[in-house]
Length: 185
Ligand code: AMP
Image 1: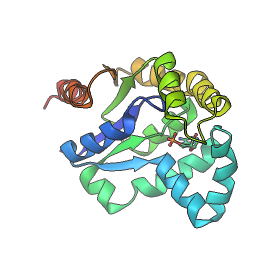
Image 2: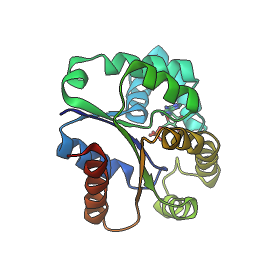
Image 3: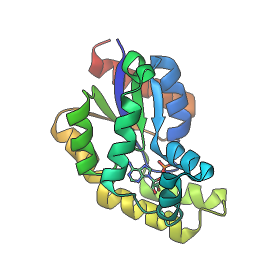
């Protein structure tokens, strides 16, 4: 069965590593809206030029723009054949409502790492785009908009929360146990 999953997690929660693992494990297509927008910005497309100013400020793009981007990607045959792991979308309740009107989502997974922990990790990385201000902006957007989106899936009985602290292999095992437990595999 093609899995249709959404993954939530703060930046710095190890979501990239776990997405690589999960897409291999379930054979699903990894759809990262951040990667798509960064590729668009690098190509200099109209979307990319618009996206860059939001991304540089750590702010979210408008919902209608993001829904359009994701809708197009979800319609491609690799995704309809193999299922998907959506990473970075939805980030707001209107995006979640739009997504679930477009496709069936089996389960949302919350890779949970506390805000203080990811803040320290990101500051320790010391990347030039990770200034304390931008990190603060991203975490504030996550608390204000994405935490309520996670609650939206929970209210529908379609959320599992997995502790994201630990060795990557340990966290991967927890994710598979939680997902398979809920999808009845
Ligand atoms: P990410 O790599 O997922 O953290 O995304 C990088 C940046 O792209 C975010 O900080 C936002 O500016 C933008 N972005 C990615 N996905 C979305 C989304 N679903 N809604 C709004 N903005 C997004």
